Length: 131
Length: 322
Ligand code: B12
Ligand SMILES: Nc1nc2c(ncn2[C@@H]2O[C@H](COP(=O)(O)OP(=O)(O)O)[C@@H](O)[C@H]2O)c(=O)[nH]1
Ligand SMILES: [Mg+2]
Image (cartoon, rainbow over all chains, first blue to last red; front, side, top):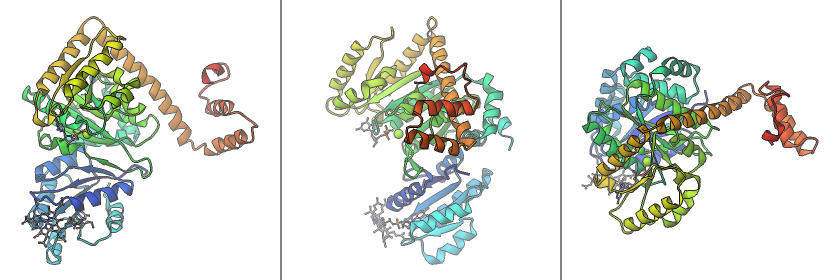
């Protein structure tokens, strides 16, 4: 299969920190992926629609505002409600260690915090996409 | 999920999946499009092109919103360049169209150019067709107005809108060759900036020289970001449509587009069949022969085509291939 992996990179909520999302977007592009960058201040509805219309293999969300416990599970649940089960969902940003188990429980496949080398994210996506 | 049934019902996920298949050159996509081909032709196809950063996505967003107020269903295909080095791409057009995302009457799809010879053009044609069958009234296709393959894509449109910006004097000169000619409507975006009137005049002057058609494209100054005069641009697009509807203009344009498409498909089929059959050995041996001047590249190409039964000795017009 030599088609590129398609990843939607999104920033849910009112969080204006977009450096990390852009770093990740560029790293994924450089790894040969097609990155659909949707920009700042996305509602969960907008993110879910983008994932559907773009037929993404992976959704990568970035949050540094502290709203991750609310927003990440919300998006995952909305995807489920729309019957989208074959999309890998990962998250990243400033997220306390203690919150990570709960997020994994909620259906986020992995969380990448500051200092994680992007190669780790790239390998994780390549090995875990579901399509 | 039955993709074809879903598409005919206007299901977004079905349309999205089918575009993926088409983009990946999947046989099943070709079959479905073939079976539904008779349903195409209902949508108005509008090409949006111009230099990077001119505001093409912003213009598309605003035009789509105007059409949504008339309750028209809108499809958008936004093409951005794929990196030739990594094969990856950042497709950022949705950033300008965020609030269209959740409108049930709008479908937005981003595409990378992916660099395959002729492949982009075919994938874009397929995507337009899929959104046509899906039930769009209008389909926008946004591409950067540089490079022949991008030009080939917008050529499939009924109306091509060139988005320019003030102060592009030299760029207009540069973009002119082969690309200005395809504009049916010109918009000078970012007319909040200095020099917008002058740029409009320069385009008008250039159009004075270009009298290849009996249709005179209009030049409209707009500020897409602030939604100023975009309605005037839409009116100009509609006037071009009225022109197309007169006499045989539309038929002529369609015929031209179909001819271009068939020829580009022939190219595509030949190249993929050569690649699929993995005749790299044959090509490699030809390379060696040409290198040591045992053969010239013209004859080498012909020999390869013959080995695929693509041309026979009789059909072969060596003069044309040279
Ligand atoms: C730079 C910065 C800013 C800049 C942002 C510029 C910009 N356009 O991004 C400015 C000055 C604007 C800013 C403003 C604010 N900031 Co600030 N900011 C930072 C700072 C110092 C660095 C963030 C950064 O850019 N890092 C560099 C990037 C490359 O790293 P990263 O984002 O972490 O991303 C990496 C990983 O996390 C991971 N990753 C991130 N996202 C994703 C996504 C996926 C899918 C994956 C796989 C990986 C991944 O990979 C990346 C690369 O390794 C952090 C502190 C810190 N050290 O993190 C505070 C911080 C994020 N800010 C903070 C705050 C509070 C604010 C303000 C509210 C301050 C205020 N009171 O005004 C405002 C809010 C702005 C807004 N509208 O949201 C807090 C957040 C607290 C919290 N979460 O509870 C922090 C943590 C500082 C702190 N310790 O208090 N900020
Ligand atoms: N000043 C000004 N900026 C604009 C206008 N329209 C778009 N822009 C900005 O131009 C930049 C590029 O716009 P975009 O639509 O992404 O351009 P594209 O690359 O041609 O699709 C963005 O920052 C827009 O906000 C306008 O009318 N005036
Ligand atoms: Mg754009």
